[in-house]
Amino acid sequence: MALLACRVLCGCAPEPAPSDADLQSLCGPSSKLRDVEFYDGSLGVPTAFVNRHRLAVGLLRWRGDLDRYFEDPGNVSGEGWCTGTLIDEDLFLTAGHCLDSDDTGTWQLPREKGSVLLRPAELARQFVVDFRYETSLQPDAPTNSAEVLRLEEYREGGLDYAILRLAGRPGVLNGVARISPSDASAETPIAILQHPAASPMKIGAGPALRVQGSTIAYDTIDTLGGSSGAGVLEAATGKLVGVHTNGGCTKSGGGENFGVAIGALLAVSPMLRDRIDYSRDFLVGDWDNDGLGDLAVFYQGCLYPDANHDGERDAAICPADSSAEQYFVGKWQAGGPSQLGWRRGGCVYLDTNPRRRLCFGAAPFEIIVADWNNDGASDLGVRRGRCIDFDTNLDGSLDDVGNCYGDGFAEDEYLVGNWDGGPHASIATRRGAELAIDLDGDGTTDLTRAYGDGGNSDQYLVEDWNGDGRSDLGVRRKTLCRMDHDADGVANEGRVYHDFWSEP
Image 1 (cartoon, rainbow, N blue to C red):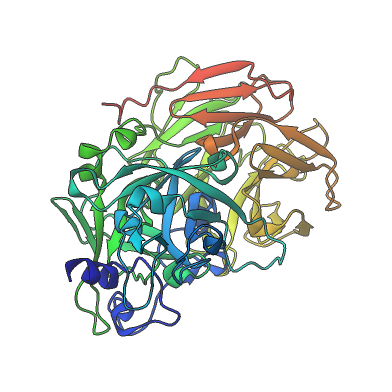
Image 2: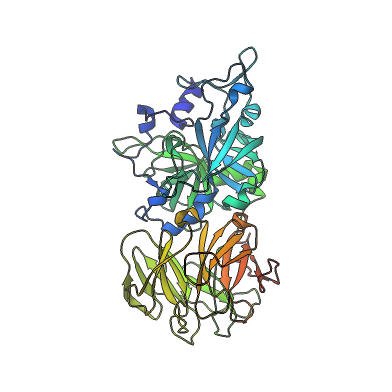
């Protein structure tokens, strides 16, 4: 009975239609979950957060050919089952109860001869993981799958989690979630990218209610059957601070949903401990105006650049808004050093005039900065889908519209730089480790590059690292950035920024 109750409340297997038990995990009368492709920032985390972190999320699905291997294949063949997250190029973290060997009133699992139930390690090999299963605007969006090879860790310390080894290296293509070294605090904004009821990926977001013992709880983030195993991500860093396991919210607004907190998992899982990430994202710019790109880290409301490349912080640059949704870098004045800009909702603010709002509407968009018209100053690019429109005089109106390239949300990332040393910047799209660049703005690929480990790199960065007037790529792994100066796909320089705020 206890195991059956877990199947209902944990919601590891989706019903064809939401049942009363499923609805108990909605925190209110209706679902607030949003399709990732149509997300507009309304849940408090920016669209750029979803763009970056959705790639590592997968749907755990039963193999579609169970009848080839079992006299009694049950009725789960091809069914979506749970959500999970890549934590390395071939490791997938999900909920432990997704591999429990129990039937429910709806689902009958495959059996060995003689009606013998499979053990969790045997069940694990009957799954595949589907990545990029989304409600796509493009019918040919790049979904991809990986077979499960074996079960690596399962319910260590009695905690509801499992780690699966996948075939190939799907993390290189799809991205990897980073492991937080510590638990989230109460009221910390968190997000859950999930496949509720085995549907295309959706996002739920809100504050953490509390972290107590081995549990992280949230009472404003909806889940359904199939959401089990989804990573709980800290909104500020994108790092994984828990694994969703249980529903408990009610339609009347009471109760709470919850999962296993990262602190408890780190205490029992060697694989998770080995993958703790203490580092922070880098911002890049020319902070001392010497023509060379420099690294910087944003921490507790201020930017700390390393303009002399010694791996240590220089004087802090503190913007007027210390808790904006997104920060970015540009040379807002021709001939000057790099400065900060930030975004709240649909409006952008610049360090040169922090009280002036430049607003570009409420529809979802991403800010991309480049010198688009070759006047020596940075311009604001506003990306919606596959098109980038530019505000070239920084007055809040779009002057250059309809620069369209790539497949929009189906791309891993949009990057802009002066790739050929020509008169203006150009749009590039990244998929895995491959860049496709449109030099002349006609919507077709003129140049390709390959560098880094794709999604298994922590961060892709664009700057002029050697002062030759051309944009170069850099890839960050933890506190080390490796730069490719000459576009040959080989690192010419490795630069460390000591992230001493968060190292143990």
